[in-house]
Image 1 (cartoon, rainbow, N blue to C red):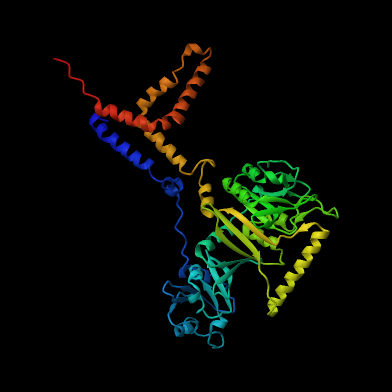
Image 2: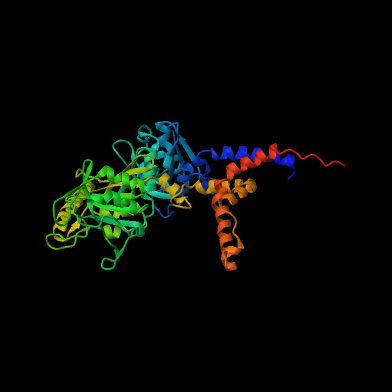
Length: 492
Protein backbone atom coordinates (compact mmCIF):
# COMPACT_ATOMS: atom_id res chain seq x y z
CA UNK A 1 0.00 0.00 0.00
CA UNK A 2 1.41 3.46 -0.91
CA UNK A 3 2.34 5.76 1.98
CA UNK A 4 -0.44 8.23 1.11
CA UNK A 5 -3.03 5.48 1.22
CA UNK A 6 -1.67 4.27 4.56
CA UNK A 7 -2.04 7.75 6.04
CA UNK A 8 -5.76 7.83 5.12
CA UNK A 9 -6.51 4.17 5.82
CA UNK A 10 -5.06 3.69 9.29
CA UNK A 11 -6.78 6.66 11.01
CA UNK A 12 -10.09 5.47 9.57
CA UNK A 13 -9.39 1.96 10.85
CA UNK A 14 -8.59 3.34 14.32
CA UNK A 15 -11.83 5.35 14.37
CA UNK A 16 -13.89 2.32 13.31
CA UNK A 17 -12.23 0.16 15.95
CA UNK A 18 -12.90 2.72 18.68
CA UNK A 19 -16.58 2.97 17.75
CA UNK A 20 -16.95 -0.80 17.58
CA UNK A 21 -15.21 -1.45 20.89
CA UNK A 22 -17.35 1.17 22.61
CA UNK A 23 -20.62 -0.41 21.39
CA UNK A 24 -22.86 -2.21 23.89
CA UNK A 25 -21.90 -5.78 24.64
CA UNK A 26 -25.23 -7.20 23.54
CA UNK A 27 -24.83 -5.54 20.14
CA UNK A 28 -21.66 -7.54 19.50
CA UNK A 29 -23.09 -10.92 20.37
CA UNK A 30 -22.10 -13.28 17.58
CA UNK A 31 -25.47 -15.09 17.55
CA UNK A 32 -27.14 -11.78 16.63
CA UNK A 33 -24.84 -11.53 13.62
CA UNK A 34 -24.82 -15.12 12.49
CA UNK A 35 -28.22 -16.48 13.55
CA UNK A 36 -30.49 -17.48 10.70
CA UNK A 37 -33.55 -17.80 12.93
CA UNK A 38 -36.73 -16.17 11.67
CA UNK A 39 -38.69 -13.65 13.76
CA UNK A 40 -41.30 -14.89 16.21
CA UNK A 41 -43.95 -16.94 14.45
CA UNK A 42 -47.28 -15.27 13.66
CA UNK A 43 -49.57 -15.50 16.67
CA UNK A 44 -52.62 -13.97 14.97
CA UNK A 45 -55.45 -15.25 12.79
CA UNK A 46 -53.06 -16.91 10.34
CA UNK A 47 -51.64 -19.22 13.00
CA UNK A 48 -55.13 -20.10 14.28
CA UNK A 49 -56.32 -20.87 10.74
CA UNK A 50 -53.30 -23.09 10.08
CA UNK A 51 -53.97 -24.97 13.34
CA UNK A 52 -57.67 -25.25 12.41
CA UNK A 53 -56.77 -27.13 9.24
CA UNK A 54 -54.90 -29.77 11.27
CA UNK A 55 -58.14 -30.91 12.95
CA UNK A 56 -59.33 -34.30 11.68
CA UNK A 57 -62.01 -33.96 9.01
CA UNK A 58 -63.86 -36.87 10.59
CA UNK A 59 -64.77 -34.83 13.67
CA UNK A 60 -68.51 -34.32 13.87
CA UNK A 61 -68.48 -30.78 15.23
CA UNK A 62 -67.39 -28.08 12.77
CA UNK A 63 -64.74 -25.57 13.82
CA UNK A 64 -63.83 -21.95 13.21
CA UNK A 65 -60.68 -19.96 13.87
CA UNK A 66 -61.05 -16.72 15.83
CA UNK A 67 -58.82 -13.74 16.53
CA UNK A 68 -59.43 -10.63 18.64
CA UNK A 69 -58.19 -7.44 16.97
CA UNK A 70 -56.59 -4.53 18.87
CA UNK A 71 -59.82 -2.56 18.20
CA UNK A 72 -61.86 -5.13 20.13
CA UNK A 73 -63.45 -6.78 17.07
CA UNK A 74 -63.48 -10.50 16.34
CA UNK A 75 -62.23 -12.04 13.10
CA UNK A 76 -63.51 -15.52 12.21
CA UNK A 77 -62.40 -17.81 9.42
CA UNK A 78 -63.24 -21.33 8.30
CA UNK A 79 -60.95 -24.00 6.88
CA UNK A 80 -61.60 -22.71 3.36
CA UNK A 81 -60.15 -19.32 4.28
CA UNK A 82 -63.43 -17.35 4.23
CA UNK A 83 -63.35 -14.52 6.78
CA UNK A 84 -66.05 -12.72 8.74
CA UNK A 85 -65.56 -9.63 10.92
CA UNK A 86 -67.82 -9.10 13.93
CA UNK A 87 -67.83 -5.66 15.50
CA UNK A 88 -71.23 -5.73 17.20
CA UNK A 89 -73.13 -8.34 19.25
CA UNK A 90 -75.49 -8.94 16.31
CA UNK A 91 -72.59 -9.59 13.93
CA UNK A 92 -70.95 -11.83 16.51
CA UNK A 93 -74.12 -13.91 16.66
CA UNK A 94 -74.26 -14.27 12.85
CA UNK A 95 -70.69 -15.58 12.38
CA UNK A 96 -71.49 -19.34 12.54
CA UNK A 97 -74.38 -19.13 10.08
CA UNK A 98 -72.24 -17.14 7.61
CA UNK A 99 -69.09 -19.28 7.67
CA UNK A 100 -70.74 -22.67 8.33
CA UNK A 101 -74.27 -22.14 7.01
CA UNK A 102 -75.65 -25.66 7.42
CA UNK A 103 -74.77 -28.89 9.18
CA UNK A 104 -75.70 -32.36 8.05
CA UNK A 105 -79.46 -32.57 7.81
CA UNK A 106 -79.90 -28.88 7.06
CA UNK A 107 -79.78 -27.73 10.69
CA UNK A 108 -78.41 -24.24 11.21
CA UNK A 109 -75.44 -23.96 13.50
CA UNK A 110 -74.87 -21.85 16.57
CA UNK A 111 -71.87 -21.46 18.87
CA UNK A 112 -73.04 -24.28 21.13
CA UNK A 113 -72.32 -26.81 18.38
CA UNK A 114 -69.00 -25.27 17.30
CA UNK A 115 -65.39 -25.64 18.27
CA UNK A 116 -63.36 -22.44 18.28
CA UNK A 117 -59.61 -22.25 17.69
CA UNK A 118 -58.29 -19.00 19.19
CA UNK A 119 -55.07 -17.30 18.20
CA UNK A 120 -52.46 -16.88 20.90
CA UNK A 121 -52.75 -13.11 20.89
CA UNK A 122 -56.46 -13.38 21.62
CA UNK A 123 -55.58 -14.64 25.10
CA UNK A 124 -54.53 -11.11 26.01
CA UNK A 125 -57.39 -9.17 24.40
CA UNK A 126 -58.67 -8.28 27.86
CA UNK A 127 -61.68 -9.33 29.96
CA UNK A 128 -63.99 -6.81 28.26
CA UNK A 129 -63.37 -8.48 24.87
CA UNK A 130 -63.24 -12.10 26.01
CA UNK A 131 -66.54 -11.86 27.89
CA UNK A 132 -68.33 -11.17 24.57
CA UNK A 133 -67.21 -14.49 23.11
CA UNK A 134 -70.21 -16.87 23.28
CA UNK A 135 -69.95 -20.28 24.93
CA UNK A 136 -68.91 -23.05 22.52
CA UNK A 137 -68.77 -26.82 22.53
CA UNK A 138 -65.01 -26.66 23.03
CA UNK A 139 -62.38 -23.94 23.07
CA UNK A 140 -58.86 -24.49 21.75
CA UNK A 141 -55.83 -22.19 21.52
CA UNK A 142 -53.16 -22.41 18.81
CA UNK A 143 -49.69 -22.29 20.37
CA UNK A 144 -47.00 -22.59 17.70
CA UNK A 145 -49.09 -24.99 15.67
CA UNK A 146 -50.17 -27.09 18.68
CA UNK A 147 -53.80 -27.05 19.86
CA UNK A 148 -54.29 -26.71 23.61
CA UNK A 149 -57.60 -26.94 25.47
CA UNK A 150 -58.76 -23.77 27.20
CA UNK A 151 -61.49 -22.88 29.67
CA UNK A 152 -62.96 -19.64 30.95
CA UNK A 153 -62.47 -18.25 34.41
CA UNK A 154 -64.86 -16.06 36.44
CA UNK A 155 -62.45 -13.15 35.74
CA UNK A 156 -63.09 -13.47 31.98
CA UNK A 157 -59.60 -14.80 31.33
CA UNK A 158 -58.62 -18.14 29.81
CA UNK A 159 -56.84 -21.04 31.46
CA UNK A 160 -54.92 -23.50 29.30
CA UNK A 161 -54.59 -27.18 30.15
CA UNK A 162 -51.02 -27.97 29.11
CA UNK A 163 -51.04 -31.41 30.73
CA UNK A 164 -53.75 -33.33 32.62
CA UNK A 165 -52.16 -32.11 35.85
CA UNK A 166 -50.82 -28.71 34.73
CA UNK A 167 -52.77 -25.55 33.87
CA UNK A 168 -51.62 -22.02 33.04
CA UNK A 169 -53.83 -18.92 33.18
CA UNK A 170 -53.24 -16.20 30.59
CA UNK A 171 -53.23 -12.93 32.54
CA UNK A 172 -50.13 -11.00 31.51
CA UNK A 173 -48.53 -11.65 28.13
CA UNK A 174 -44.98 -11.31 29.49
CA UNK A 175 -45.44 -13.68 32.42
CA UNK A 176 -47.49 -16.12 30.32
CA UNK A 177 -44.81 -16.41 27.63
CA UNK A 178 -42.10 -16.74 30.27
CA UNK A 179 -44.01 -19.49 32.10
CA UNK A 180 -44.71 -21.24 28.80
CA UNK A 181 -41.03 -21.12 27.84
CA UNK A 182 -40.08 -22.58 31.23
CA UNK A 183 -42.68 -25.36 31.06
CA UNK A 184 -41.61 -26.31 27.53
CA UNK A 185 -37.94 -26.41 28.48
CA UNK A 186 -36.43 -29.89 28.00
CA UNK A 187 -35.02 -31.40 31.16
CA UNK A 188 -31.65 -33.13 31.12
CA UNK A 189 -31.85 -36.05 33.53
CA UNK A 190 -28.06 -36.14 33.69
CA UNK A 191 -28.03 -32.62 35.17
CA UNK A 192 -30.75 -33.04 37.80
CA UNK A 193 -29.69 -33.38 41.43
CA UNK A 194 -31.98 -34.70 44.17
CA UNK A 195 -30.71 -33.17 47.41
CA UNK A 196 -31.13 -34.44 50.96
CA UNK A 197 -30.25 -31.90 53.65
CA UNK A 198 -29.01 -34.10 56.48
CA UNK A 199 -26.71 -32.99 59.34
CA UNK A 200 -23.30 -34.62 59.30
CA UNK A 201 -23.27 -35.01 55.50
CA UNK A 202 -20.52 -33.66 53.20
CA UNK A 203 -20.27 -29.89 52.87
CA UNK A 204 -19.82 -29.90 49.09
CA UNK A 205 -21.57 -31.52 46.16
CA UNK A 206 -19.84 -33.55 43.44
CA UNK A 207 -19.69 -31.74 40.11
CA UNK A 208 -21.78 -34.41 38.37
CA UNK A 209 -24.50 -36.82 39.57
CA UNK A 210 -23.60 -40.31 40.68
CA UNK A 211 -25.55 -43.35 39.47
CA UNK A 212 -27.43 -45.49 41.98
CA UNK A 213 -27.60 -49.03 40.59
CA UNK A 214 -30.13 -50.13 43.24
CA UNK A 215 -32.58 -47.37 42.28
CA UNK A 216 -31.64 -47.45 38.58
CA UNK A 217 -31.21 -43.69 38.54
CA UNK A 218 -29.28 -40.76 39.92
CA UNK A 219 -28.11 -41.14 43.49
CA UNK A 220 -29.43 -38.79 46.16
CA UNK A 221 -26.88 -36.12 47.10
CA UNK A 222 -26.68 -35.73 50.88
CA UNK A 223 -25.50 -32.29 51.97
CA UNK A 224 -24.96 -30.50 55.28
CA UNK A 225 -27.92 -28.05 55.67
CA UNK A 226 -25.75 -25.17 56.87
CA UNK A 227 -23.54 -25.44 53.76
CA UNK A 228 -26.25 -26.07 51.17
CA UNK A 229 -26.15 -22.52 49.74
CA UNK A 230 -22.37 -22.56 49.34
CA UNK A 231 -22.49 -26.05 47.81
CA UNK A 232 -24.66 -24.86 44.90
CA UNK A 233 -21.61 -23.13 43.41
CA UNK A 234 -20.19 -26.59 42.69
CA UNK A 235 -23.04 -27.56 40.34
CA UNK A 236 -23.36 -24.60 37.93
CA UNK A 237 -26.17 -24.68 35.35
CA UNK A 238 -27.71 -27.80 36.85
CA UNK A 239 -31.11 -28.43 38.45
CA UNK A 240 -31.30 -28.91 42.22
CA UNK A 241 -34.43 -30.47 43.76
CA UNK A 242 -35.00 -30.00 47.50
CA UNK A 243 -37.87 -31.22 49.67
CA UNK A 244 -38.69 -28.66 52.35
CA UNK A 245 -41.49 -26.77 54.06
CA UNK A 246 -41.76 -23.07 53.33
CA UNK A 247 -41.97 -21.07 56.56
CA UNK A 248 -42.03 -17.47 55.38
CA UNK A 249 -38.45 -16.42 54.63
CA UNK A 250 -37.00 -19.79 55.68
CA UNK A 251 -37.08 -23.43 54.66
CA UNK A 252 -37.51 -26.25 57.16
CA UNK A 253 -36.07 -29.72 56.53
CA UNK A 254 -36.60 -32.83 58.66
CA UNK A 255 -33.82 -35.45 58.74
CA UNK A 256 -34.62 -39.08 59.44
CA UNK A 257 -33.44 -38.54 63.01
CA UNK A 258 -33.26 -35.39 65.05
CA UNK A 259 -35.19 -32.11 65.00
CA UNK A 260 -36.00 -29.91 62.02
CA UNK A 261 -33.31 -27.68 60.62
CA UNK A 262 -33.83 -24.21 59.13
CA UNK A 263 -32.27 -22.86 55.91
CA UNK A 264 -32.46 -19.20 54.90
CA UNK A 265 -34.37 -19.03 51.62
CA UNK A 266 -32.83 -15.75 50.40
CA UNK A 267 -29.29 -17.13 50.78
CA UNK A 268 -30.26 -20.24 48.87
CA UNK A 269 -31.84 -18.35 45.95
CA UNK A 270 -28.92 -15.90 45.81
CA UNK A 271 -26.46 -18.80 45.57
CA UNK A 272 -28.59 -20.45 42.87
CA UNK A 273 -28.66 -17.19 40.92
CA UNK A 274 -24.88 -16.77 41.11
CA UNK A 275 -24.32 -20.28 39.73
CA UNK A 276 -27.24 -20.21 37.22
CA UNK A 277 -28.77 -23.17 39.04
CA UNK A 278 -32.46 -24.05 38.63
CA UNK A 279 -33.74 -24.58 42.18
CA UNK A 280 -36.94 -26.59 42.63
CA UNK A 281 -38.40 -26.70 46.14
CA UNK A 282 -41.01 -29.40 46.73
CA UNK A 283 -43.19 -28.09 49.55
CA UNK A 284 -44.11 -30.93 51.91
CA UNK A 285 -45.25 -31.15 55.51
CA UNK A 286 -43.56 -32.84 57.26
CA UNK A 287 -40.46 -32.07 55.16
CA UNK A 288 -38.81 -35.49 55.40
CA UNK A 289 -35.58 -35.77 53.45
CA UNK A 290 -35.30 -38.50 50.79
CA UNK A 291 -32.82 -41.28 51.30
CA UNK A 292 -33.48 -41.86 55.01
CA UNK A 293 -35.77 -44.34 56.76
CA UNK A 294 -39.11 -43.83 58.51
CA UNK A 295 -40.24 -45.44 61.77
CA UNK A 296 -41.24 -48.60 59.82
CA UNK A 297 -37.75 -48.69 58.34
CA UNK A 298 -39.12 -47.86 54.90
CA UNK A 299 -36.98 -45.80 52.55
CA UNK A 300 -38.14 -42.16 52.36
CA UNK A 301 -38.68 -40.93 48.82
CA UNK A 302 -40.72 -38.29 47.02
CA UNK A 303 -43.73 -39.85 45.35
CA UNK A 304 -43.29 -39.88 41.57
CA UNK A 305 -39.96 -38.03 41.63
CA UNK A 306 -37.89 -40.86 40.13
CA UNK A 307 -40.19 -41.00 37.11
CA UNK A 308 -40.59 -37.22 36.95
CA UNK A 309 -36.86 -36.63 36.54
CA UNK A 310 -36.89 -38.80 33.43
CA UNK A 311 -39.65 -36.80 31.70
CA UNK A 312 -39.09 -34.62 28.67
CA UNK A 313 -40.07 -31.14 29.85
CA UNK A 314 -40.76 -29.24 33.05
CA UNK A 315 -44.49 -29.52 32.33
CA UNK A 316 -44.12 -33.32 32.15
CA UNK A 317 -42.15 -33.20 35.40
CA UNK A 318 -44.96 -31.35 37.22
CA UNK A 319 -47.63 -33.55 35.68
CA UNK A 320 -45.87 -36.65 36.97
CA UNK A 321 -45.64 -35.17 40.47
CA UNK A 322 -49.37 -34.38 40.34
CA UNK A 323 -49.84 -38.13 40.04
CA UNK A 324 -53.40 -37.94 38.68
CA UNK A 325 -54.90 -36.95 42.04
CA UNK A 326 -54.45 -33.18 41.75
CA UNK A 327 -54.02 -30.40 39.20
CA UNK A 328 -51.32 -27.73 39.52
CA UNK A 329 -52.05 -24.14 38.53
CA UNK A 330 -48.76 -22.63 37.36
CA UNK A 331 -47.86 -18.96 37.63
CA UNK A 332 -44.66 -17.03 36.95
CA UNK A 333 -43.18 -13.76 38.15
CA UNK A 334 -39.81 -12.06 37.59
CA UNK A 335 -37.22 -12.59 40.31
CA UNK A 336 -34.48 -10.10 39.54
CA UNK A 337 -33.05 -9.44 36.10
CA UNK A 338 -32.03 -12.99 35.23
CA UNK A 339 -34.36 -15.17 37.29
CA UNK A 340 -37.98 -16.32 37.18
CA UNK A 341 -40.07 -17.47 40.12
CA UNK A 342 -42.39 -20.30 39.10
CA UNK A 343 -45.12 -21.57 41.43
CA UNK A 344 -47.32 -24.64 41.01
CA UNK A 345 -50.26 -24.63 43.44
CA UNK A 346 -52.96 -27.31 43.60
CA UNK A 347 -56.39 -26.30 42.36
CA UNK A 348 -59.09 -26.79 44.97
CA UNK A 349 -62.01 -28.61 43.36
CA UNK A 350 -65.50 -27.36 44.16
CA UNK A 351 -68.22 -30.02 44.73
CA UNK A 352 -71.02 -27.79 43.37
CA UNK A 353 -71.38 -29.71 40.09
CA UNK A 354 -71.25 -33.37 39.18
CA UNK A 355 -67.83 -32.93 37.56
CA UNK A 356 -66.71 -30.82 40.51
CA UNK A 357 -67.90 -33.50 42.94
CA UNK A 358 -65.90 -36.11 41.02
CA UNK A 359 -62.76 -33.96 41.14
CA UNK A 360 -63.32 -33.15 44.81
CA UNK A 361 -63.68 -36.82 45.72
CA UNK A 362 -60.55 -37.59 43.70
CA UNK A 363 -58.55 -34.93 45.57
CA UNK A 364 -59.93 -36.03 48.93
CA UNK A 365 -59.06 -39.66 48.21
CA UNK A 366 -55.62 -38.58 47.05
CA UNK A 367 -55.04 -36.63 50.26
CA UNK A 368 -56.06 -39.57 52.46
CA UNK A 369 -53.99 -41.96 50.37
CA UNK A 370 -51.04 -39.59 50.61
CA UNK A 371 -51.13 -39.52 54.41
CA UNK A 372 -51.32 -43.30 54.62
CA UNK A 373 -48.61 -43.69 52.02
CA UNK A 374 -46.27 -41.36 53.90
CA UNK A 375 -46.68 -43.29 57.14
CA UNK A 376 -46.46 -46.80 55.70
CA UNK A 377 -44.22 -46.62 52.63
CA UNK A 378 -42.21 -43.50 53.46
CA UNK A 379 -43.24 -41.71 50.26
CA UNK A 380 -43.53 -37.91 50.50
CA UNK A 381 -46.27 -36.24 48.46
CA UNK A 382 -45.41 -32.58 47.68
CA UNK A 383 -48.32 -30.20 48.18
CA UNK A 384 -46.92 -27.50 45.89
CA UNK A 385 -43.77 -26.66 43.95
CA UNK A 386 -41.84 -23.40 44.20
CA UNK A 387 -39.00 -22.86 41.75
CA UNK A 388 -36.32 -20.22 41.27
CA UNK A 389 -35.28 -20.66 37.64
CA UNK A 390 -32.90 -19.11 35.15
CA UNK A 391 -35.01 -16.81 32.99
CA UNK A 392 -35.65 -17.76 29.36
CA UNK A 393 -33.63 -14.78 28.10
CA UNK A 394 -30.69 -15.61 30.36
CA UNK A 395 -30.86 -19.27 29.34
CA UNK A 396 -30.70 -18.30 25.68
CA UNK A 397 -27.67 -16.09 26.37
CA UNK A 398 -25.90 -18.95 28.15
CA UNK A 399 -26.65 -21.34 25.29
CA UNK A 400 -24.94 -18.96 22.85
CA UNK A 401 -21.66 -18.93 24.74
CA UNK A 402 -18.77 -20.75 23.12
CA UNK A 403 -16.97 -20.77 26.48
CA UNK A 404 -19.38 -21.10 29.45
CA UNK A 405 -17.39 -18.76 31.73
CA UNK A 406 -17.18 -15.94 29.15
CA UNK A 407 -19.91 -13.73 27.68
CA UNK A 408 -21.16 -14.57 24.19
CA UNK A 409 -19.56 -11.36 22.88
CA UNK A 410 -16.06 -12.34 24.09
CA UNK A 411 -15.16 -14.29 20.89
CA UNK A 412 -16.24 -11.27 18.81
CA UNK A 413 -13.97 -8.93 20.78
CA UNK A 414 -11.12 -11.42 20.54
CA UNK A 415 -11.47 -11.86 16.77
CA UNK A 416 -11.70 -8.09 16.26
CA UNK A 417 -8.63 -7.51 18.43
CA UNK A 418 -6.68 -10.14 16.47
CA UNK A 419 -7.57 -8.43 13.17
CA UNK A 420 -6.60 -5.02 14.49
CA UNK A 421 -3.37 -6.53 15.79
CA UNK A 422 -2.38 -7.47 12.26
CA UNK A 423 -2.44 -3.77 11.26
CA UNK A 424 -0.08 -2.93 14.12
CA UNK A 425 2.00 -6.10 13.70
CA UNK A 426 5.40 -4.41 13.13
CA UNK A 427 5.15 -2.40 16.36
CA UNK A 428 3.74 -5.31 18.39
CA UNK A 429 6.58 -7.52 17.14
CA UNK A 430 9.21 -5.05 18.35
CA UNK A 431 7.55 -4.82 21.77
CA UNK A 432 7.32 -8.61 21.99
CA UNK A 433 11.04 -9.06 21.35
CA UNK A 434 11.77 -6.88 24.36
CA UNK A 435 9.38 -8.88 26.56
CA UNK A 436 10.41 -12.33 25.29
CA UNK A 437 13.76 -12.28 23.46
CA UNK A 438 14.27 -14.67 20.59
CA UNK A 439 15.74 -18.08 21.35
CA UNK A 440 19.33 -18.90 20.55
CA UNK A 441 20.09 -22.20 18.84
CA UNK A 442 23.16 -22.60 21.03
CA UNK A 443 20.99 -22.80 24.15
CA UNK A 444 19.30 -26.00 22.98
CA UNK A 445 21.25 -29.26 22.54
CA UNK A 446 18.61 -30.68 20.20
CA UNK A 447 16.94 -29.11 17.22
CA UNK A 448 13.53 -30.41 18.37
CA UNK A 449 13.80 -28.46 21.63
CA UNK A 450 14.76 -25.29 19.75
CA UNK A 451 11.79 -25.63 17.36
CA UNK A 452 9.40 -26.34 20.24
CA UNK A 453 10.54 -23.20 22.08
CA UNK A 454 10.05 -21.07 18.96
CA UNK A 455 6.58 -22.50 18.40
CA UNK A 456 5.56 -21.76 22.01
CA UNK A 457 6.89 -18.22 21.73
CA UNK A 458 5.07 -17.63 18.42
CA UNK A 459 1.82 -19.10 19.75
CA UNK A 460 1.95 -16.89 22.84
CA UNK A 461 2.56 -13.85 20.65
CA UNK A 462 -0.27 -14.53 18.19
CA UNK A 463 -2.87 -15.86 20.66
CA UNK A 464 -2.26 -13.64 23.69
CA UNK A 465 0.02 -10.65 23.20
CA UNK A 466 -1.08 -9.50 19.73
CA UNK A 467 -4.82 -9.21 20.63
CA UNK A 468 -4.00 -7.49 23.95
CA UNK A 469 -1.59 -5.00 22.38
CA UNK A 470 -3.70 -4.51 19.24
CA UNK A 471 -5.13 -1.06 19.88
CA UNK A 472 -2.02 0.67 21.31
CA UNK A 473 0.17 -0.94 18.65
CA UNK A 474 -2.22 0.22 15.93
CA UNK A 475 -2.22 3.80 17.28
CA UNK A 476 1.59 3.82 17.57
CA UNK A 477 1.93 2.44 14.03
CA UNK A 478 -0.40 5.12 12.67
CA UNK A 479 1.55 7.88 14.38
CA UNK A 480 4.76 6.49 12.92
CA UNK A 481 3.35 6.63 9.40
CA UNK A 482 1.77 10.06 9.78
CA UNK A 483 4.80 11.82 11.28
CA UNK A 484 7.49 9.99 9.39
CA UNK A 485 9.36 12.54 7.30
CA UNK A 486 10.35 11.72 3.79
CA UNK A 487 14.09 11.38 3.45
CA UNK A 488 15.67 13.95 1.08
CA UNK A 489 16.66 12.62 -2.29
CA UNK A 490 20.44 12.03 -2.71
CA UNK A 491 22.31 14.73 -4.59
CA UNK A 492 23.03 14.03 -8.23
